[in-house]
Length: 163
Image (cartoon, rainbow, N blue to C red; front, side, top):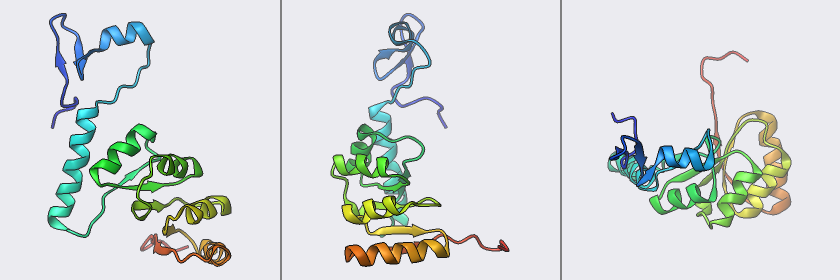
């Protein structure tokens, strides 16, 4: 497995280059630490992941966990690749909304969801809610009734753990 992105190479100055950009030159211009995202690499890996899952499980939907890092740029890449999103905050929901991410491919996840986060997801049309505890089921039921929404509920279980 290659550690570097698909477009990585060593250029004539013996500098690492990614996506045609000299990393040493970028570090001089912008300082460090500097985070770079290789568009070609991200598109290729997103498609590869989706195809790997769907070739074996045609009804599967691989999700990107937005808590790793999320931006409109990444949201558009994952939307184009046909991936879903595992969102955990109103900010992440807002990014998905701004790029018109398909609502049926967004899952609200995370423990200790606030009423505002649940309300925002349901108002936005997100109908996949991952429930982590019994209190959350009651909260979700109450908010869904207020909004006349019918979410699809997924239960996160921790087997063999005595509460």
